[in-house]
Figure 1 (cartoon, rainbow, N blue to C red):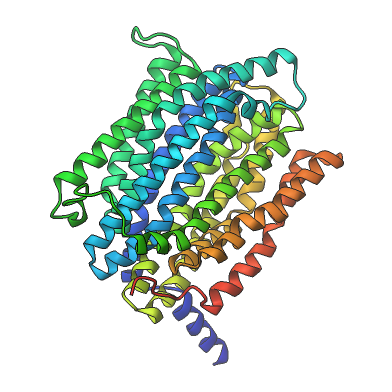
Figure 2: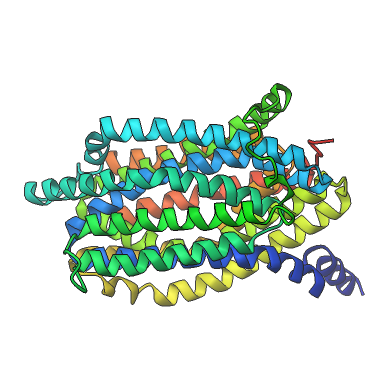
Length: 468
């Protein structure tokens, strides 16, 4: 009898009904499809470059790691205001949504300008940081040259990327997840077609290699921006915030202060987290150019599989944020418990598929046997830790939904800089451990983070309405 009661209690707390999963999937699946297609095309893009040669693939991979820091910087910037957007939407406050949109636009424009300036003046030095390991002088010089070719063209796409992030994040926070998905699908198809035409020079197009891959990415960014912006402003009945959006670019000082207080830790967090990921890659790269190539192969397929817990985490932020904005605290906690359990369960299944694919995927690349073997091992280790990462991601977005951005800052980027990076730095430079052992020990360090996340979520420190 006691066991039955425990089962019933567990089911009630962590398992939802059909209506619950339908609600979650209506939000998560469009995000999943958009991210999935984007990452799948990035995977094909990566394979196409990888079939030209190791130096081209490594050069593009290093630049993508650096651009990733910018991407997350923008994501963190719009996410801070997005907490307010989701709760304003819960209140049906359209003027509040307009004001948060304007804040996002100003911040994203400033961040983009600073990034372009940094890459134009220090791009070569930043790429050189990843070329310290074993490898011939010719291979290192070629990797650096291909990286610079790729970087200069990729900078042209940053303004379009910025606009898409500002608009698409606002649409999602207002419950419109399908249009950003459709725009993303169209953009990645454009990217895929022009990758094929410009990397290999098909149908009378010139053979441009890595430059062709960068041009295709930039074209796809502007196609996506055109679709998202034109649809938003043509459907003002569905998107009331778009009416009079640019009648002024002023943001009320009081709201700016509130967003800065809540949002700056998010912006700093995402930037420091992305910089930490770049630093971790740099630590692993001191073991040689094969590690750079293997990590690129591994990260490419990891990104495709990671879409499940990323989309479910985004859904936590949206659905729980809306419930908190509407003052439904008990319902917010119940929804959060079930969504975290659902994310971990889904990602356990995904991890098994990833383990099965680990020996097969690296064979698609035109690189040496050492890089392929390392890539297989990286993929397997990442798969084993995927359920752990699913829990961490959902816990992070739970804390963020209630505006606990200082806590998320400590939980995320402070942890990675104080625990993960020192582990990688010390082990890569002062021991003879193989790179796979170092990578595994860094993942094991996150167990401490899981314990902290579990305690914070259970205590309910995130249950706050910040727009009332």
